[in-house]
Length: 352
Image 1 (cartoon, rainbow, N blue to C red):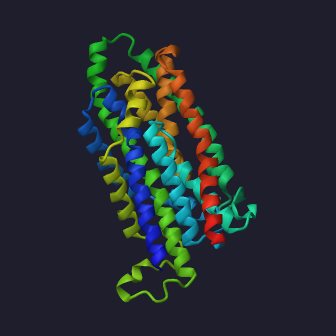
Image 2: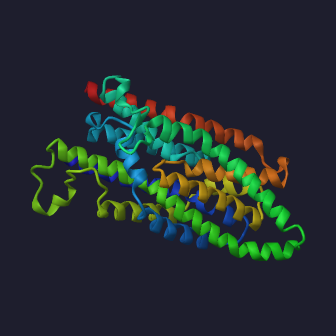
Image 3: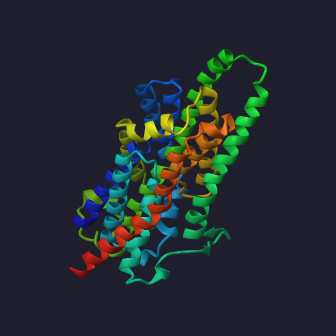
């Protein structure tokens, strides 16, 4: 039981790191366009991250039940999955690379579960149809969206910026800057809310999986009465789990993430308020669609590629493609590296 509680604490630590690691997703564009000061942007992002995190639960269900076989999941396997994700997040944060916290967590979960199953690949749910006839599993919920969402970010961002360019061509730059300076506050808020609805749900799913396995394995049978709320006979996200994850992510967001903010908001492409509005609106809309379908999307991938699409419409050379190349390497490597870290950590633990 003690190890389960330690794993819950580590999960919340991951959520906190996820908050400051992904702060840039919600506020980089509004800071770089000078629509909001860093302090204002962080306050807005943290508040709406908190609100968004309390909304829905489809993504949490996907993380908790849709990707791996729960009979192979133990507190130890979840612990090593979280540690792999945390290590990778800190490395990419230090390097200023906007990698995906979502894929880091998913890679860690798959790697540690595979190790616990002694290399049985059937422990990972690759593809299956649920009771409602919808396709689930790693392929449909993670791999396909990992490829499609960045493409959608670039294309929709480019098209939205093209449409705005046509509609606003008769207006003066001064007027456009003034109007979209206000509208970007709205789009930044929408982005912050969307980030909370998707990203915070992932840790909720992990904690619920921990409590579920603790209950079914009878590890919680000796719990005192005042800790009875930890028992979860059915896989359902408890309200206290939602609140804990929401508050922790908001606190992490408030801590900032200036290295990644500089990469997204300044180094990759220079933006004006109208570009920031287009990028944030594009990314937030894609995230909301994914959240509705329970897809644990990478908000980092979506906002980054939306910025690329908007910047390419401004002019192709406006995007610093060398920096984009470095980001792509981080995206490609996240799943396999975290899976390997968690796999070998779990194997060493089992050998002891």
